[in-house]
Structures are given as structure tokens and as C-alpha cells.
Length: 398
Image (cartoon, rainbow, N blue to C red; front, side, top):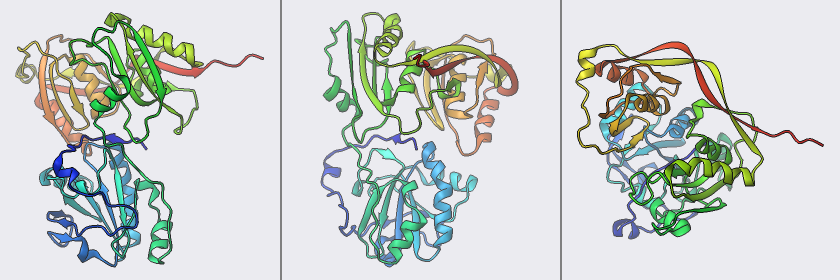
């Protein structure tokens, strides 16, 4: 299951909270704002005698949403002996909208101040905290590891052994400095190493750094297929056909590449990867079902804010975008990768640069379509020839 990286402020306030260890008694947590619950608030002590599963999640976290049906099944199987509480630092309003779209049978706790999260420090979500009927910590793990067999064993007072989820709490900026520090005078360098345990998968091209913008690429804990996708033009998963059969447990790698000219960055990465691996890549046009982005209302479209600052910003995630100086072609890529997760082709015929900022409900696709309509844009399903990246292994000739 793909993990999502979250930033934690590891200041004095968090440092003062001792992290609970396995088999230790969990402090008496206060759940001050509960949703989808018969009570508006509760505390951990009031749940003593039950198995308690705290599921740290967010509405923008795709892998968190994938885990929700599993949690529903567990809560249904053990209505009186298990209490699942999904904990989010998002607003009560946002969580309520999610519950309305995706009804659940467990409780939701609002933790905007991160008082609960600080007791169980983590950087990746989903993050599952399992607490026994005696109030002691069983494990910090992943939702798929908590099965009916595990719950049955706990209720029978039997020991369970779960894979530990232990995150590296160093910020990604410090992580890169520790492993790939570089002076801004470096003209060429390639470094590659194995996985950094407990860290998220991420990549950056340093676009907000004047010294390295566009001429440096840093990747942390990415599988080889993803590195090839980046090297061949930042192809998204939706436009990649993976024929390598490497599986979900393929090793992940870290690398840092610096070149003198931005135009040489991806060709250099292709060459460095080719020296070390037998994976092959080719681009092939394929007829695919796509969503065509078009202007449906010129008056509404003209009301979209035009960029005047000349500054390009890049903030985007599932359910939210805040980008300046973005083109319609780039916006179509956002809708494809973070919105509807279907192929999107821009046919607006517009090359202007805009400032676009909005949020929507990923669990409710209509919410995004409504926003697009308000911008004078619409999507229609058609077929187009799309360049797809094919990843494969070169056959071995004996």
C-alpha cells in the first residue's frame, strides 16, 4: 500500500511528549470532538475493556481511503468489543463532508491541534495504533496488518506479533541534506544508494531553488519503475504500461543528480540508469479512452484569475490545488493525476497563464466537476491517440 508523507513540526511541544512504547500503558487520551458517534466526546479510559484501533488518516490520502472498507468490516464484526476511531487533523466540516459521501460505522475524531498525533509521532499515513483491552499499546502498524485473527487473539488474551511501522521523523529537507548535501557550485554529480528506512517516497526538481532549479533531481525511496518514468519525461502512472512484473515488493532507491544545464537533466538520468539496470523504456502511441478538457462557457472562463506576478508555484495534492502561472495543459495534468485519475487531454486551445486555487472532495467526484463547470470548463469522454511509456525487461539471449 502506498504511504502518504505528512510534515510534522518536531518542536519543543512535541519533544516533551514521550513516545509510548509497545506494552506500555497509553496515556488517557481525550477525544474532544467526535463525529459519527453516539457521544460528542470521550476518553480512552472510558473505552477500557475494548480493543481500540486509532487510525490516523486524511481525506486527501488515497491509501487511507482504500483502507476504510477494511475498517468498516472489522467494526461490523466486533461491534461491542472493538472501537475504531479514525483520527484526522482536518476540520470538523471537512470530515463531516467525507462521512456524508462515504458513510462508515466507526467513529471519527477531530485532532486539529495534533494533541493525539503527538503521542504517536509519525510521518506516513495511514498509521494504525492498536491498543489492547487493558489500555496497553499492542502495536504501531498498518491497517492491513490488523485482521480478524489479530482481534480474536487479543480478545482471547493471546499475544500477537504485528509488523512494526516505525517512521523516520527527520524532515525531508534535513533528510536530503544529510544524505545528498551539495554546494550550489556543483556542475555535475550522480549519487545513488539503497532505501532509507522509515522515510516516504518523494522526488524534487528543486524548482523553488535558484541555484538548482531544473538542473537537479533528488529521489528518496522510489522503485526503479518510477525512476524510469521520471527519466523519460515525468510520465505519470496513468500513462505508463509496466510489463516488468517486478511486483509490489520491488526494492526502492535514493538518488541525487546535478547537471550544468536543465536540458541535460533527464538525458543524464537515462544514461546513469542504463549503466546500472537492464530495464528498458519506449514510448508508444496508443488509442485510449480519455476525458477531453474544453471551454464550455467563455464568460465564466474569462473570470479565472490571470497571472500577473510572473511567479510559478506548484502546490497540489488530492483534493486541493494552489498554483500560480499554470497553463490549461498543466491544469489538465492536475485533473488527471489528482482529480479524476483518468486520462485527460487539454483541447481548450488556450495558452494563457492563470492562478488557480480551490479544494474539492476526492471521495465525491461530482464536487470537482461542479468546480470545473464554475470555471467554464467541462470534460467529455472520447478517444484519442496518447503517448504511453512502456517499461519492459530486455529478453536474455542464451
